Length: 337
Image 1 (cartoon, rainbow, N blue to C red):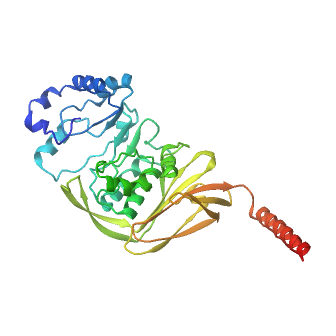
Image 2 (image 1 turned 180 degrees about the vertical axis):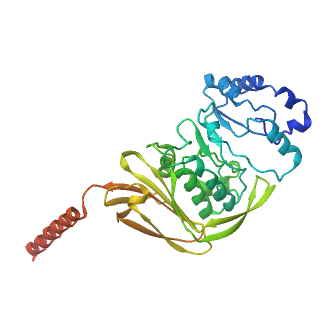
């Protein structure tokens, strides 16, 4: 609703002065049984509180994709494609009257755009006081899985949205059965979805990034209508999100043009034990035990998505147990001989 495609401000210029008819649109949505609605920023209906109050009794999920100042998007719409994106301010989202909100520019069907939008979430994922939280989620626009992205890029993009608790809204044409079939191993990954959905005190945060950079020219918008924006991107990033029972999900991303090793420490991602059992979220299979740190080797634009489960035994206790097991095996072998 209130979107750019309908061109309300051009076709109905008087609507800006009147503020549109939010109440009528709310009744329309409820009558048709919608589960969710995105209120965009190109039309006249910018009273997001009125939207929220009208829809709350119908349990309709409300996305705030606009600006509460109607003159900002109105100017932008009429002045052309070079206007800068204005993200919400902290005071705008401290008391939400909506369920999720855009914290980025319009995404384009390119990997670079998805990763650029990921960076726009960082002010809302503060380690101590995150503004993205249950009932008021920040996100970087709709998923571009197999919408201009290949398998590797799509998987990394999906992991980035999962580890930052971003709402997972598909953007590819669901009538395209080939794209949907290709995307299903990614968008149907139960462990990745669980990481996204579960809450253990934080929506996810940036752990570390490289000092080395690579320069990207980033386009914005579904039709690449804005940009390019020059971005000196770090060649890798490490993200983490706490999970229930002391577990932590970790996403390592290679943003650079060549294969590279990326190493993270258990303490840096929030694991307080000396070691952790690892599950590879992409394969949903066990992947050994980390002792202090783990190194992953990634091709360009690929990612490692790992679920870490603390092991409370000390290294000495583990070695003692290993020694006991080896002794048992040796004893059993002697009896066979």
